[in-house]
Length: 81
Image (cartoon, rainbow, N blue to C red; front, side, top):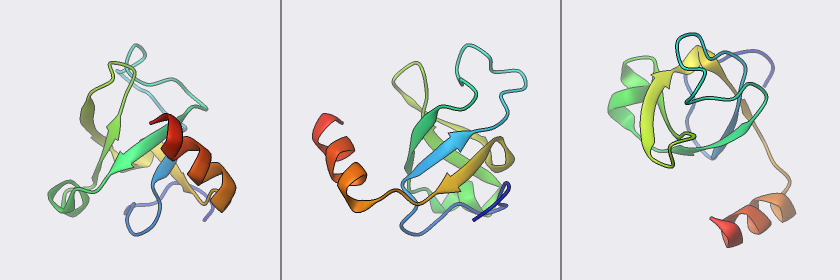
């Protein structure tokens, strides 16, 4: 999927940060972040990610671009999570 999406859902478990307005200490541009499913957040144009604090927080969906990772990469990331 190209560009920011208004909805991040489904099997997309990782996103790349493309904006961090107001959150430079919490979100690094061009960094991969894991997504936690949150239907309330999705309904409100937000996404729940584990940020630099190591905790999960809500951010505007347009701060991220969802990506599909190869299965081998997802498997490797799951081992270190």
